[in-house]
Image 1 (tube, rainbow, N blue to C red):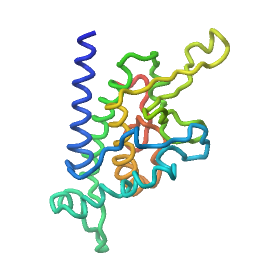
Image 2 (cartoon, rainbow, N blue to C red):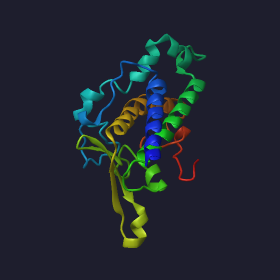
Image 3 (spheres, rainbow, N blue to C red):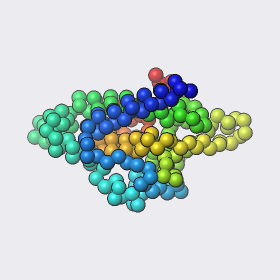
Length: 224
């Protein structure tokens, strides 16, 4: 158990460093997104709906969607890395810089999948874990906020053959891990990942999955 605890602590520290140092550009004026401050409607079934679209969170989330782009605009060292002038004289994001950013996203997600899966909770098989969504689509999202904590809700398919019906698998993330995930979703995904993929990959970005490869390819259970 001690080794498991050490693994979780190590992976959390790496994920935290990747998020704040790389994905959020080391900005020291970004306020973390914390579950205790947010409201969520667990019965919401609108397409694309989540705590991110809940009007009660508007003040807390104000400015998060464009926070990272503002940092690129305002900081000369970031403009030099991320901004290029096209043939028509317009500005665009640098594909090489975006590819590097995407690589950091993948490293962050690798750490997050470990610290979400390993801590004591009902076990999740890879198909359930990797199909976790954060917004509503044709099915209800898996990431919710309940009792001031991040709750992961999935259907547990393993027992389906035994009892003839799906059962629920619910786990609450430790506060530090949950808040790290919320901050990533609100700032890095909404503010940077979604924006650049819409720009460069013609809008095919999946707006629901937590775990995804570059160009919106979902993670699969057999990935390494």
